[in-house]
Image (cartoon, rainbow, N blue to C red; front, side):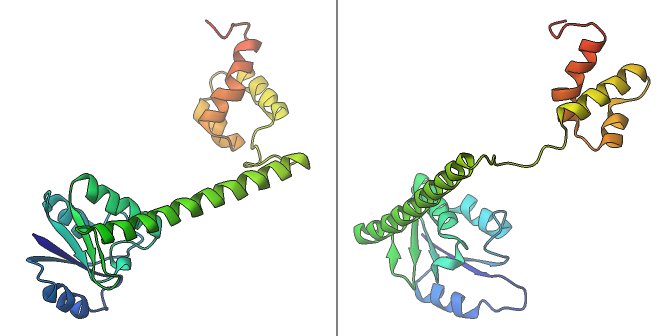
Length: 195
């Protein structure tokens, strides 16, 4: 069964051109959606994926109707293939029901993988160069050891204050409190960490 999927990004755009193309491609059922392609939680798209069965083919007018980015598109088609559902894009002549269509799609996937590896490689080189200059990546710490010690002293002398109020007052998260302040509080009280 051929299942058509027509999508536009905004409610004031029309689906007519896509629906005509899908009808000409002899789609037996057509799903229509007015939602951004960047969104992963498109309700009509999810409904269509639930409806499709092994041996069916999802048909779109153009590749960008299925997903905004190449990576998202490849992930979606790989998900379809894992369910033995084929994919056809009319404008680009990609048809995974044929060997040639599958080959073209794998070229797209290889290109996306190559781009990801290049980005990763450039990032690693950049981080290495920064480390060589003494710079460390990541967010600036909101809680220094000195500040943690001061907060621990405060908590020890004011045990009635809640942890939440101490965190709010000092602009730190509960995770930071338990990671850096709490061990110091236990130490000040003479309690070992294992107890």
